[in-house]
Figure 1 (cartoon, helix red, strand yellow):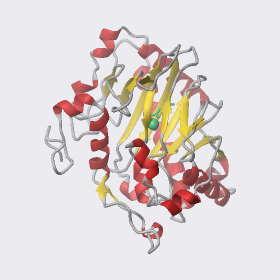
Figure 2: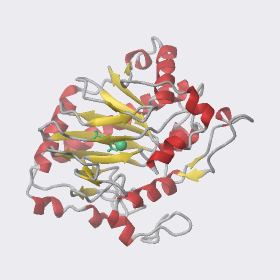
Figure 3: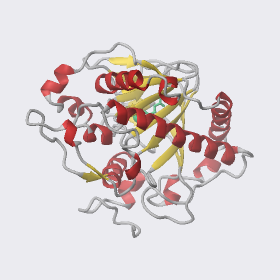
Length: 346
Ligand SMILES: O=C(O)CCC(=O)C(=O)O
Ligand SMILES: [Fe+2]
């Protein structure tokens, strides 16, 4: 699946892509203050067409909130294994909320076991509503964890609106183009821990196997430890090491579908051979569960016919989650509609 993501790209689009040996860096300030929106849109266009990834600086999220969220993340993963397992994601049914232990989610399951542990939260709901919406599971022994992590999630939602505005402008769409399909978007705030690996590292076990992200947009905070790698056009892994004061953003499958492959949901993975514990905070935002995603008219022509059938955001995302999360596979195999055959959905 991973190789085919690149190989399947239309040859003319593939030929148009330029190689990159480092992930580009974008100053978001001229977009946010309106001083040079056109330049930011142009830089986003290049980055997302060629790398699918870009660092952003001057994003406006307070450093203190990021640092505190990392501090709570370390404290969470330092909890005894039994305490974390009490919050296991399978307690949440088909809602993606809770703890995933090492090898509990494998991003490239045919090749790689992921040496990572995760904790997922999202928009708060009283009861299970759909695969992506349900009650959060909060640890009880960490004062301040809930408030800080939830505030961070809220800050990411706000930032994502600005970035999606820039992406829309880069496609010559109005800045609020994504908003009508984001009334109650699927979003997940994930906390991640990757222990270091030493000796000969085999692809069978690495931090996170090669994958593309599933939705619209990912905003990633990294601590100071290297590990993230992004695939270049030539199939070479390019390191996207932490740059202080930046987030790494990348687009997922849904924007690639929307742009009919003009923008690339690029393959990436994590290998932590730094000798240090690595922590990161990915925030994933998609569209509404029932939003229909299909190639934009402006990205379809006689020379470049539509390559994707319309699909709902929820169906696409849930099918991809089932591939990598064995607990969903076992308990909630998808039916022909692409909807889980588990609890009733709205
Ligand atoms: O931890 C990282 O640097 C990347 C995480 C990632 O790719 C993901 O969660 O999808
Ligand atoms: Fe990813």
